[in-house]
Amino acid sequence: MVYNQYIKCQVCGSVTRIRLQVGYLKQHPIVVICGKCKTSLYGTAYIDQDNIGLKMEFDNANSLGNHIMSEGDYFVECSGEFPVRKQGVDDVDNLISISPFLSQMMSMSSDMKNIETYQQALANLDRTCQKWKSYKRILDLYESKSPYLKQEIRKEFDGQMFPCNTDSEVLHTIHMIEIIGFCSSLKPEILKNLNFSDDILRLNPVQMKCLNDFLNSHDGYHLKQIQSQIYKILDEFIKVYPSLIPAISLQHSGEENFDFEHKGTTTSTFETIKQFYLDVYETLGNLIIIPVAFNNIHYRSDLNSSDIIDSKTLTLEEFVKLTKANRYHFCTDTEKFTAFLKLKYNAKLRNAIGHNDIEYDSILQLITYYPDPKNRAKKDTEYLLQFELEALHMFQAILAVSEYLYRLQELKFMQDGDSDLIRGMASKIGAYDLCPCGSGKKFKFCHKTKK
Ligand SMILES: [Zn+2]
Ligand SMILES: [Zn+2]
Image (cartoon, rainbow, N blue to C red; front, side, top):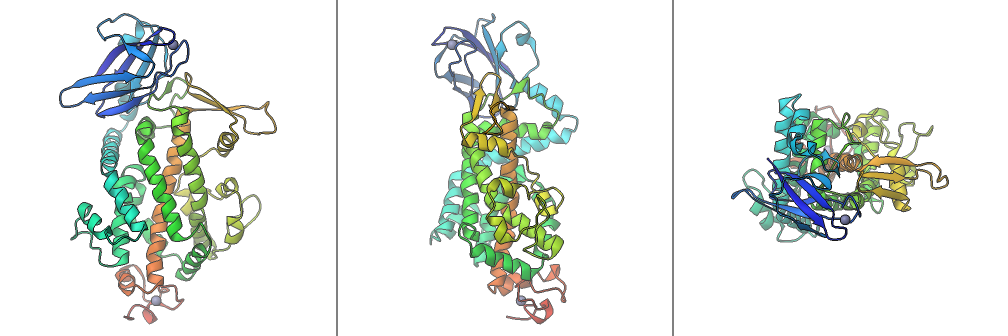
């Protein structure tokens, strides 16, 4: 269903027709600009799903009632869930054109499963948002080692399925917030490929112990500090999520062939997403050390031997001294632990934002930036939805590294002598493999029998 409403700009008096795609969200932002005087007419759509009522409120514009089906001066298509045609001049064609919903369904329906997975993903993320207050409380209590932690976990997680008697069981339960709340919708590969996690546990345990020792001896890289950075980003994602939904829907319909020039989003503007983009970029820049170290161990059996990048190979100590932008160069798709991140980013744009060297056209939804601060003759551009997709890809990469971090924390428990956890792995390791505790001895002669 689409719903038309005319609004009048309080500044210049132009009339804009809002054509709203009514979706399942109860409320979502609407980002509209007056086509004439460029005043922001930002608003909110409220949809009462039970009584099929609908209301839109705008800053800087008044509603004209929705009965006059004449043409406005400008036309804006809006949707809380899908990309839409970009705003333009109003004409008769706009009354009969295909709705954002149908347009998106048509591009997804090459494979019917796409639509289903998309709807499932949104429903899951919606539930995460609703539960976020209690999830966040659990994460905070975990970080502060509060005695109330278990009490709060019990309110969300069934004690039979999620026992919390040991530290590793508590961590396992808390990790479910990321798995159920985020990965199931945004990085389902983690759940689909369980071998992948086992592969991490099969990396040389002595080297993995060295990695944990390295991280825990470098300020900013302690496992707890890295975890804390990830929790902070989860919280930021929840806040910006309603604005990112159309970009998420694009990931399900194929972002490669999308018409970024003519279609855009009405749930966000550059300013809505900017800080999130900067923060995911910074955080991921800190986290990349983990997949890089895994690659070193997996491909070269040496924690301190990186892939050859920019014609050099680096030790971990040299790697942490790199700028974030240079660390990103190590995130190649030729080695599996970085390839799994499926990273997309734009370091030049990130730097331009840092220098405030960008311009944003809110009608075209186009970011113009100077990739080289010393040569202002050269300009590059990127559309808002492309920018949002990069932010999403970086966030999804963080979810993947978070899974790596979880495995590192599990190993840390084993390195610290959690024999039950080690013996729980017995089916996954051979008697003559190295013991996961990192002692360097064969499993059979170490924790296989040790109490
Ligand atoms: Zn105006
Ligand atoms: Zn052992």
